[in-house]
Image (tube, rainbow over all chains, first blue to last red; front, side, top):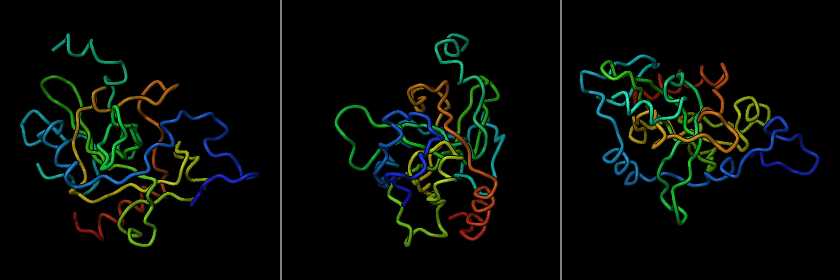
Length: 61
Length: 144
C-alpha cells in the first residue's frame, strides 16, 4: 500500500491534487455496472461506431 | 449535430488514447449522498462515430480497494510509489479488467469530467511496463 507517511516522498510529483484524487475507495457492483450500461452505455454494434484503438479483447458488440 | 458539439467542452473533440487514465463517473456500490464521484478509469478501447465525429471509449474502473492477493494477475494493480506518480495518480490503485465490469461510454462531460485544476479528464497513462502487463493479463484471461 503506497499510503504516504511522514518523511516519504510526496506522490503527485509535489502537485496539490484535488479531493477527487482520494475518493474512489469503493468497489463497483455488477448491478450498478448493468445499470450504467443500460442508462449511459453505447451500443457499438451500430454500424456508425468504428473501433479506432484497442489491444486484444473488447466488450462484445 | 453541430450544436451538440459546441455545447461540449473542447477536450471532447480529441479522443483519449488507449491506456490513458481518465477521470470518469462510474457508479459505486455505496455512493455518498449527492452526485457520484468521478474516479480514475483506464481506457481500454476507443471508438469513433463515423457519422457525427464524436468518440466513445471502453473503460475499466479504478479503485483503492487493491485486493492484492485475490486480484494479482487478474487486474492491473499499481502500488509502487514511483509508478503512482508516473501515472498521475495519488493513491495505490487497482484497475478491474473483468470484461463484465467494463462499459463503453461516450467521451463527453456527462460521463467524464476533469479533476479540479485539470484541462481535460486525462490524468495520466499506463507506463510501458504496465501496458505489457495488461497485454499479458488479457492473453492469460482469454477475454474473460
